[in-house]
Length: 108
Image (tube, rainbow, N blue to C red; front, top):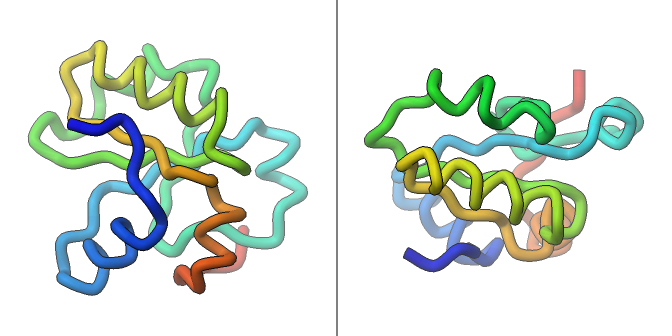
């Protein structure tokens, strides 16, 4: 499995009714100041992957994202894969998703 997934590939999965479990791993301060998130995304602390990874469904495809798709989401995806989960990071993060016209929801 490739470590990354493009916004276009993720959008195609949504369009085909095959949406993965999407997890927002932006750092707390960034998440709180952001106006939105990817529709349907769950928020998890990237510093505590080991604490929440075991609660995720093992057979589910997972996509994690941060702001730009660099260190935070790549490290979270790697940690999830090390736990035996099928995880990828969103290339370009939420910024690329937004630029590609991906569906967003208000951050509440």
